[in-house]
Image (tube, rainbow, N blue to C red; front, side, top):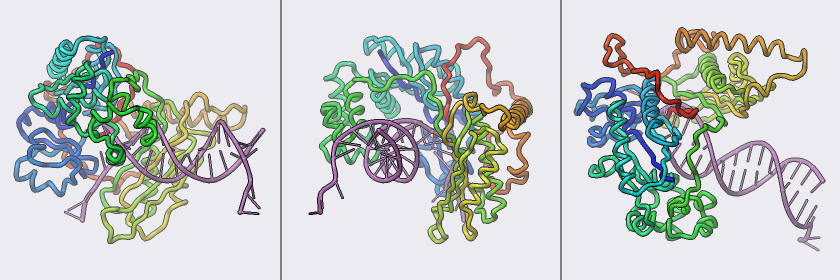
Length: 438
DNA sequence: TCTGGGGTCCTAGGACCC
DNA sequence: TCTGGGGTCCTAGGACCC
């Protein structure tokens, strides 16, 4: 089977540009939540030397000097673009795994390398024509090598955005001989130094190493890497999303929080957000962990990372119970005298909602049913009126702790050109959960 | 002044059991 | 001083990813 990775170029920056064609040729960056860090850069912005992940205040001058367009992130819009890109990709491939908001693994029948390259070019053109988003495509026999091929395609203009890792083993070794092993997906700084200390410096070294030997000093992770590097697939496309194992809602504050009531409000808000995700996925949680931390970039201030866990018995998806549990967690770790910078809620021990309803007649079943109907009604209203229109009072009205988002692109509904296009006859996408990150 | 958010997988070690 | 040999389950924490 031939596999491929299609990965959108500078995805969030490309979305901003697609929304506003006047940005063509202009350097564009997109900021993280709270307008804190740079999370996406157009090629022009990269050329200016703006680093990925840089705190915005450090590059603000540079941006002003060079007329960089700066946008707050707008994940709802990027999610819409993502869905359209994935729809086009799904039409082009035999199998698809939507891996993240801006990339998908594709599966095709085997074919000669030259045909694979032509196929990659066709797909790339189709996505650009129908969504305005540029993608790079790497094709290879294993997903690890697809990732590598994609990275090579992105780094080399002459490749035209498409790269095939040769199916012939000798040609593959020649290609990967100069490539450092830490360019591989899954090889971070820790694993890279361990591999180097055993004489594995390049991707070709890894492909030539005995997998069993890798296992002895780099565990099953190392063994799989070695196999995939030599063209033996260890992980294949996953078309059905695995059930979620945890849910996190957290955010940095716009200003330091010292007041307990304010912190409690923020935790209630995150509990309610996490509860909404639970219900969207039809899950219940059996444990909530509330946490808060001070500003780690201020060594002059007292530092603390505090958390407390609360069991949820029976497991629940009810926003009110989760908000109450978050308040209980806060009571477990609260201590005055700190300037809190960030807080959030983890939900763990997730299981399908239908399996966990109380079985004993008369024991809480009525209350559970009433709670469920209230949440269903709230979700239905918010689906109609807009997210968060109906919400818990405990999550606050003022929300003074909220971070800033000052550079959102205005979406004009009077400009027909900019309206997202809905396609009624598109193919059904696999039920893969798209994760919003990057 | 200002420094993101949301995940998964693997391993080691302890509790507990027979 | 010496004091079995497994097995499973759970948890904490590291490593890595987008």
